[in-house]
Length: 266
Image (cartoon, rainbow, N blue to C red; front, side, top):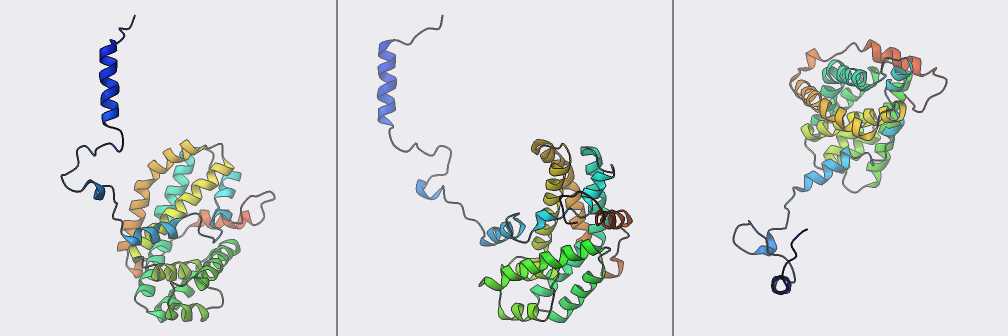
């Protein structure tokens, strides 16, 4: 049987508890005013970065799978292992070689107010879409982000003038202007874009495969090194070497246009 404490011991414990009623002392912190130790000093740009990368950004990214839904339909992606292979290939063989460095160049041009270069890059991005669905995805998400930026006070007048020069801004151009408006560096804007892409791909998998949230988190842990590799490669790739030949993505996207039953718009 457990040994019960004596009445004297219980009385001593109760007295000690009453003596320490109120806020507990901060143990292990440096000497000084305890009221200042709980205050976190966060760079304001962190909030802007989280805002840009958030799935709550009202641009409709959840509506698109970028060919992944068709890959599931065709059996190319059927479990965590094949999903990891598909996403890794998209990151390293496609995004890191063209889309990611192109987006980074968009953000650099917008940050430097180099509007002619920015518009030239936007035209290059528009011409690079392999299928109608991928082109519509970029145009529709860019339009949604444009509508948001035009209603917010952060975008300066030169940025607004750039938007008016384009009839249908791409997502990359609007993303670059959002980064300019919210004071996000080009490198961080690229990080937010890559993270948003990965998060959306995992969301597609959870809707099209028997893949739960814990399995998706394990897959995230496995893919984060690939995400870093893609960012590093894109950041160091000279424009003369931009380019990819994502035949699998293009074919999956074109086949998705004729898919009978589907959840996503690409």
